[in-house]
Length: 424
Ligand code: AMP
Ligand code: GLY
Image (cartoon, rainbow, N blue to C red; front, side, top):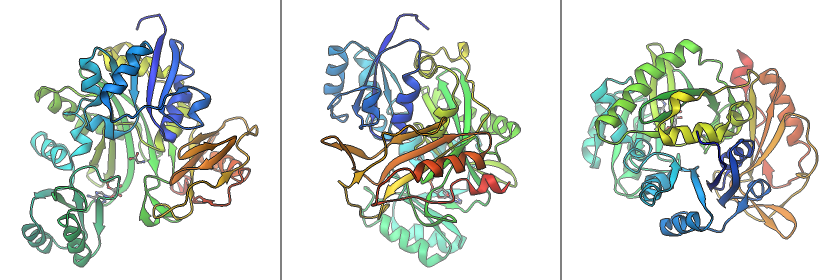
């Protein structure tokens, strides 16, 4: 790790990126922090740049003009589009996997084939490129069964079908072209608690970070449609050290080896979505980036220097660094616009964000925008009210107390974030 300071460009505009900015801002070798496109919360920690992330040449030109030494890519789309390859080709260091390696998230079939080849525990599956054989297969296997569109579908491409009718409807949808080319994975339904496990990989070494649990459904009691995540806490109590070790050795390490063997070592974060079955942890999916809202709780607990960790990942020097976490749990409540994950309205005012919240509370911005001097809603998931405390129950109480100090009539949140951990 060099000692001179580095100017950093953070890409993305969600609560995840606000939390990354919050941690990067504390890093000892941070020069100037820029973010694009960012949001008003990130704007308090970084200089915002009106850059179109999909315009790789524009991002590279910005980096050259502002002496950017390191780019941190938040969301998956630029990874899958090969932004890190283009930055590297221009001599710019970046955090995140190459386009090839990002297929771990971008293509479910790609990941499933690696699992099969390397004996990585996951649900039994078949890939299909046409409707008729897929239907024949689900009829043979019976329900419950899981149908997944291949490719990025913003969390909306998965149907956990409890009946055959539901499974066939999901297949018909996929092959109607809603999710692009019409390719799917049909897989065995796994039973068990879900948890997320995060591991940095520099292409040679792995460094296990920590765990978290998300709340995918929009409604209390885990009901209603799937969302990007309505709240989270870290660590996940069900992920004991022994289970983390097992997941690292049976799932993440063989995946890293597979990518190296394919000539594309994985550099970035493995976000492994796991189901803890009776036979042990099994992989449901990989994401090639940090989680949202999982990052918000992880960054509350991170004691180590985030920039140092991310740069060590990009430069192949992870073996020289350690990740230290506060023992206390953190919990975040997502405040979303009424109607989310369906139709929402933008532009309503949010008041009360400028007050001093209790110690250990951070309100991360996701879909917010500035309208003159006012903060207004500008997306589905809008705020992530996050608290660190001695227990999940205390963190929950503290987070909801802060939620109740915010005045936004068009927002809503789940009131039961953390229920599973608190029940334990
Ligand atoms: P994914 O987009 O792959 O994370 O899937 C979304 C959600 O579907 C997961 O968080 C699980 O709750 C559920 N899911 C996915 N695959 C399976 C499976 N094989 N068995 C049971 N549930 C699953
Ligand atoms: N919270 C789920 C995700 O980041 O994919």
